[in-house]
Image 1 (cartoon, one colour):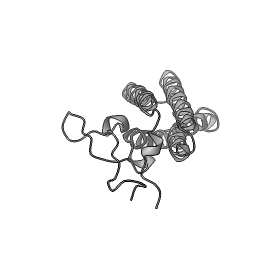
Image 2: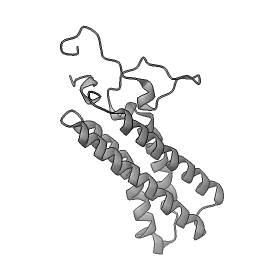
Image 3: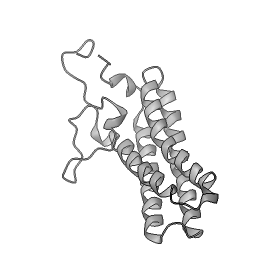
Image 4: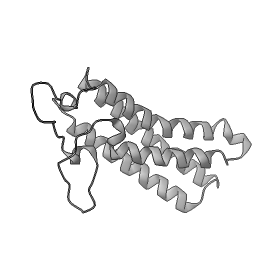
Length: 159
């Protein structure tokens, strides 16, 4: 149970980027882990897709463009996770890691453009990646803006 309270704290779902089945935001679910964040889930799914496609690049690109794509796409997820874990000690750390994750999302838009312009992916894949990474960056910026004072301390303590 949460120290000093008989009820479990609830965070605004709007802040986490998790939507219910309808179009309205709801406010009933606590964020217990970085895995509960829709932005993490979305970035993770996309990083798997990027990883798989990067392995089909020509051999000359496997250790250059492909490696950069795999690193940048995974860095988004890793920075969300690490920042979430460090937020208990410092909300500023959480925001710093979200900033790094945003930078990696923007970086992925560049690598996607290179892949498209070099003929390694089709226009549909490029547009999908461009749009998804743009949305991920916006979600990260919103989470950063809403993770003000007290957000980290509202987390449910580890067992």
